[in-house]
Image 1 (tube, helix red, strand yellow):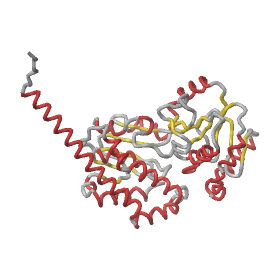
Image 2 (cartoon, one colour):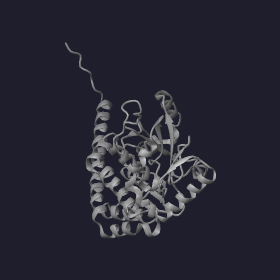
Image 3 (cartoon, helix red, strand yellow):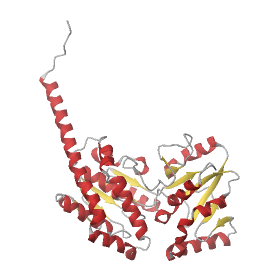
Image 4 (cartoon, helix red, strand yellow):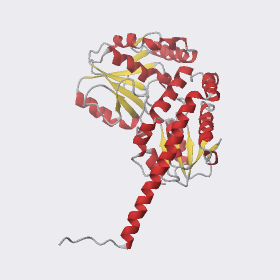
Length: 363
């Protein structure tokens, strides 16, 4: 005779509680997905917001209309897509986090803090946001639009000049500001990000189309983003001159005054120091071991031994945000993407590899 397990009242209680929590999480998830998909449409159609987009370059000349629209495209098509949101959030048991999160945004890329904001929003926590002086117009408009959809949000969010009275902090800045962040926020649960760059590994067998897409990885947002390729690894005897004609879609940079001021300065330094380099009218290629490169400059390094390069990349993993390559298997780290995809992170592509949403839900 089969021995049936006897369920105690406590067993039944926990089963029911687990079921209730699951159903609540599912309802919570769909509630926010509904709001976010509505936001997606408003970002494309709201006249007041589109006017701010149009004028963003007046406040910050680095925020060209082309690059602001590119950032919006990455948000609407990759972060606010309904199926992408469902796929992302199914991995979490969402709940209302009754905490206040301090958010410090960088200003290197338009709306660069959106993913952190999104994580806080779906966790239902309160937010205090310190905007960068370089990007003070766009984000308040995004918040305005979402508040018009989710009227409860206006009670949970503040834009502040100085952070105080918070429970945890997520801050993004340079290596220099990171030292201050580390000191001031050391007593709080935190995610503190500093400088990172991205690299590309070339085999020498890339197609013309792949090299043209590499131009997006290098030049989008003038190269200011942590996901911008600042260095390429090329095989020994690689003909670097073939890169220039494939990057011609960005020759308009030659007419951007702030970009060209940086180009002229860096070119002068190279010439004065008699540093060997290749150049066209808007980009310089310089052999250098450093991953980070100045604006208008792309560092390169040659490789001949796959294993040596793999070891180098793994040793530098704390400074690399993502690796662009089409080489199968060998260079497919968790942070690897195809050519032209570095600036289109998925919702699960967390900065520095730290799961922001799990961090918030653990508070």
